[in-house]
Structures are given as C-alpha cells and as structure tokens.
Length: 429
Image 1: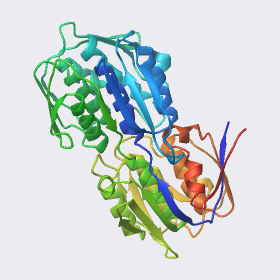
Image 2: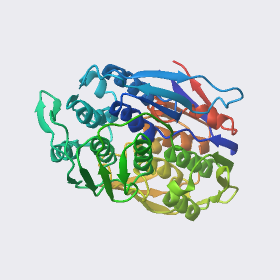
Image 3: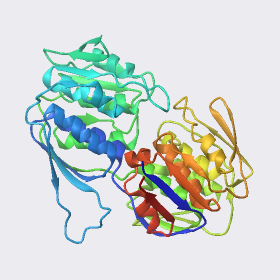
Image 4: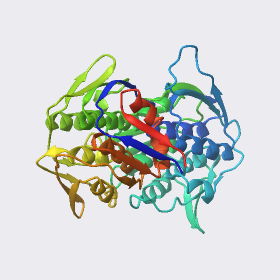
C-alpha cells in the first residue's frame, strides 16, 4: 500500500494548476444517462472516483471515449471525455458498484426519468457519518415515482413518466438537488425544488443540462425551477475548477509559507475560506491567472470557523483549516455542522504534536510553536490531505499511510506540491 513521505520546513513557491472539480464532474458524467446523444466534458480530473464512475456508467450502457493530449498541453491539464448512452442496457446499479462510491446512487434520477425504472442499491455506511437518501426517495415520490425498498435496493418505477411538482428539501442537500434536478428535466410540466443546494457544482450541472436542451432557472439560489422537456440532446461542457482543491493548496501555502499562484482558481467560489485565511494572516490576491496566496515570516493567528452550506465555510475544507490552526497563535474553535463524525483527523494531528480537544461537534485548537513529524494514518479523503498540510510545516519527516483516500479527490497531489518546492514523495509498498 502506497504512503506519502514528507520532510517539512520547505516554503512553497511557484504555481499550481487547479484541476476540474470532482464534485462537478461526477454528476455531469451521470447526466449522460439522460440522452442518447454524446455529452463531451472538458477538464475532467484524473481521479480514482472518476474512474470508478466510468465503470459504473458502462454497466448501464454508456460508451466512453477519451481524447488525446494536445501538443504542448501541460501534463496536469484535465482530460476531455465523450460519453454516449445511446441505449440503456441495464437499469440496475448493483451493490458491489454503488458501495464503492456514494455519488453513484445519483443514477437513480436519470434512469427513472429516461426509462421509467431504476433499481439502485442503497449506498451503505460512510466513514464521516450517515448521509441518508430519504431526501432523494421522497423527492422522486413527489415527482410521481412508485418506490419500494427491496432487499437493500431502491426500486423506482414511473411507467407513464415523471410529473413535475413542488419538492421541498428538509435541508439543502447537494446530492438530492443534483438527482432531482436531473430527473425533473424529463418530467412533464414544471418542477420547483425549494431549499435547494446553492453550491457552484449545482450551478455547473444546471448549465450543462441547459446546453443539452433543459429549461432551468434559479440555479444558484434556494429555489430552482425546471420546466420538463420531452428529450435532451448532446452538448460540450467545460468542468469548473475545483474550489476544494484550490482551498486546500491555499491553506497548504499559508501553513508552509511561501508564495503560490493557484492557476484557474475562482475566488468567487471561495469567499468565506479566503476571508478566514486573511484574518489568520495570509495575503490573498485575486489575479487574472487565479488566486495568489502569500505568507512570509509572519505567524498565523487563531481564527474561529463554523462549517455551513454554500456560501458558508465548506465542510470539505474543515480538516485542512484545522491543520492550519494547529500553528495559530492563540486558541481557535472549529464547529462542524454538516456531518456528525468528521473529526477523525484529530487524533492523527495529535500525533504530530497538535493540541486539540473535542466537545461534541466543536474542536478547540490551541496553537503550538511547532509540529514534529511522525507516522500518521489517513481515515478519509479530507482528513488525509490535512495530514499532508501539517506535514509540510512539521519538523522532520511525516509519513502518511492509506493514501488511496487522497487519490479519490486530488489529482497528482505530490507532483503539484513538489514542483513548488515541497519535499514530498510517494513511496510504494
């Protein structure tokens, strides 16, 4: 099993190209199930989760073609992929596939909308807490689907097609918003999704669906209006830059010190994280190339943070921000409001010398003058990269094991950091 070895103390200098957003690419790929024409996606990241979803979609009959790299293109540039579901050959998403990645459950919306039926395995547990699919099920029922739970599978049928209706989500859910918005594009009449998620990835999916011929308004707000059409066509769409990757490298630069430009990053999608980083002492500048993050010899100040749905502070940056706060002057409090079990990185950060105490969903972080390298173990995607960030500033060597979590969400992380001066290498078992 591969490990990541980091020797801390080197500031980061240079530029890092930001990959396409995983959390946008996955629903965009699933949208290919809505049409028998070709959907071409540009800037698709090369990630383990993306590869898994290609395999899952192939099970439903989606043909995939990868376009070669253009002459002179950066090795870290995203790939261009064409997907075509000319015929849906199987409406079942089996447990052995869905259990490998929760986002694959979202195929239930396009499948039932296009074919009138879907049999999708319940996704099972999650290391960072329960993420129930009740919102998905009740939303599809409201759109006219008959749904049963049969031996661990959600069986949805709508022989006469889905019918537009008003759906109110109990709380903003990105996955439910993705799924219901895709399903509603082929429903008869208008669907109104209230209390919808507002994340940029939801907007990106809506823009792609519109390019395919869908009629959608209000995306980016709490109320989305979808006027169903009889069919969708093909389209070409560029996946937006990954705000979580950009935020992660911004926090890594603030932790290690240095001067890094995050090429292609959108400051508009990171307003709250960048605001907190400025309060902590990092210098943030928006340029025509992206976002420049700089921190020289000045220390980091302790800053409190509460996670919240977009446009609040994202839960997917909580672990990375906590890593930064371990070096803050003073005491910071970080409250997790989205998931109930997303502090598993705390005990691993403590192995590096961090002082963190937990009280329910709030972590109190007392900044220390220095961290010391040690062997640590990743427990999930965001926790694993928080250990890398801490290792960049720790004294001596840090070795992070179980880095297959990293490969799910960060494209060639060690290469991007190394070209900015980090002493980081992947070690094969």
